[in-house]
Image (cartoon, rainbow, N blue to C red):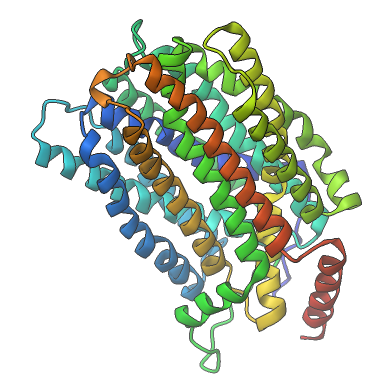
Length: 465
């Protein structure tokens, strides 16, 4: 009889490896907030950008669930794990895929620019999904213990923050000129460098990840074939997955939708776009401070409970941002930063436990249906997140244009338009916080008591099999 491989105990190595995975994802994703400014101010696609961004979301609608279902249906035996194999392949493509979204040809004909945008986005999105969907699914397989999952989720947030903080702080100083206008050629070079860094980070994660749950792929004639439509129906009935997805959609509608308006806010209202990254970096301090406390606080209070409190804090902060006198001077920047600190704390509490909540949602699917569908559950969650990430900027641009934004004016919008951007940013963030509260408080139903019951029954079921 073949001796079963002894697995190493869960520890810091697992946490660092999982954090490295999201650092790799964000090396590819961090520039997406710059995409609208690049294509409207540098490439000149202002009138077409929103429409094209919605068009490429059709690809998202096909891409995420299909790749997730392909992963779930894959019964091949791999040397280590099928999820790690897909991540490895996706990381190869992401070396250059992100840069394809920023090919700097501002003088190309309109039809050529549209082809460049669509092809670049589709190729990037395909490789990003191939890497990101199995990466998210791994959390429920690395450990089945709630405290371990809370640690993994917290460390994923650290990886995500680092992947955002570095370009957030440095890039505005590099990719904008002294007149606060974007230098498109530098964005392309930055994307290539970030692609290489992401690849290195993914390789570190792959080599240091230990799979401890559901490692066996059983292939036999009696095993029922994977049914993608049934899996999607199961997702719709999965309240924790739906609730976590609504909260994530809310978060990204605000973050991604507000990204372009925030850039214009600093370009034309505060007249200092170079410090925008530093301000946003400073606003992340509460997230960094909360992350080390996440494991103990989850054990004591529960994920749903903590995340709901965070959503309430964000709603209060965004409401203050809307009504307080944020003036176009140093005082206004200070008030803006204080509101962002409180908002960041609220989002930080949720983002720190969000992936652990999705890991529990995957278990919930198994608890209710008897079937594990990690790839499909996570892929559908990822699809709606990316839909929000795409539709958020598109809808925000429509509103910005309606409020007087003119892409050709670049960093020199009128003060009247800039003032409208100041209120638009606050409004988008408030809408985001309200959606998070609805998803976490009213839909997500795995509180601390229900989670303990689910884990106990799942453990008993697995032992008896």
